[in-house]
Image (cartoon, rainbow, N blue to C red; front, top):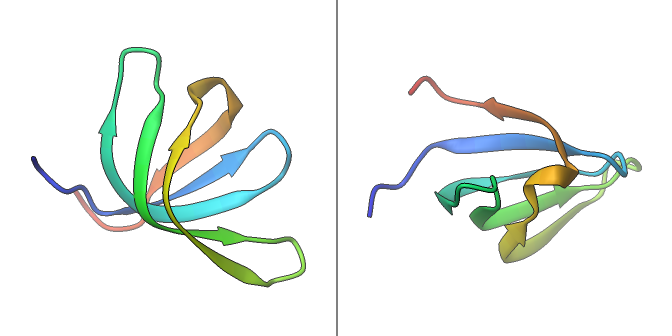
Length: 66
């Protein structure tokens, strides 16, 4: 399957995550690999592969041109 460029996400609980979009479904649930969670303190946590529910996403931004 096609690998999409890294993206930055902002969530309702003010968390930010960055990684590579591997897939999504009609309900906007996202599968992100190589995910890094950016805490408000500036600390970054490597979380690996994550599934993010679409209704918790406020902003979705491509960090590289598509």
